[in-house]
Image (cartoon, rainbow, N blue to C red):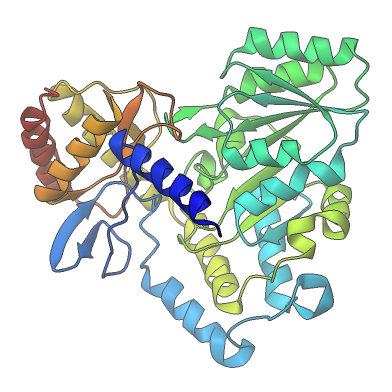
Length: 394
């Protein structure tokens, strides 16, 4: 590289630092859990997607270890060459049954699932109508397809109807509405009841990214469609959050859709298949989740207690029913300072700021976990009170 180019990159990094937007990583020296170790320090973790506390569950660890001796460490290939074992199909079929779909297809991550979804299914004669706050992976996946793109304001059903009408008026052959089931920066749920009604009115299909819902939202944790009492056409999701917290994504839907994705989804065709240990642990995670009503109850009890405690301290919160509970701070530097002070008080959180959220809407996104105890939550509330006062937030 030329020195001029490296100087340009260095200046960009310096500006990111000066704007208070540099992301820093702390090194965890323990398994993921409600409490973690960062170097020699034990801290309460309020910023992982480990909703049901399964990331260090002994049964998942045992299942992962138990798969290695008979099935090996890695597949060293993509699925259609020689990268498919019987347990890959077992997990796909169990996921499909759990979600009420014909079949499912595994990917390395849900980013890859969303990235590979749209291009094989939609052509230039078709249309995608996407929520403005959809995850970056949905946005990137839509960019890769040739369908005409329409966008509606977050959860604005009037705008969605306007975009659907426009797509129909402009002659779209097939229309797919794309939405997150849960908008992860805010903890808001998509209005799937009204989205489904509009889809039926305009003869459109619905796809939902349910990464922040599978395993704990709705009856038996089947996700936001189950929570809303509706059926959608395509579901994408992850094994990397409530389902054990490792890696892996999926698409679930009608059999012809899954069959075509197996033939043409580029991240599936050109990426190594998931290693046997991850697949075996995913199967065990589904078993635990199907029997996990107690974990789901504890998660939402913790979320209600935590929300009430922060409200009592007069922090500004976004409303909601999800275990994501954002504490709104406004400016990036304040979010960074607050996160640093909370770490000093024994609480691990991260500041979220532009470009992850809009400018002026920086926050600390707290996330509840079924493994957290009431005593840990009380200690964390005390830390928020101390840090909030020190930073001038409350």
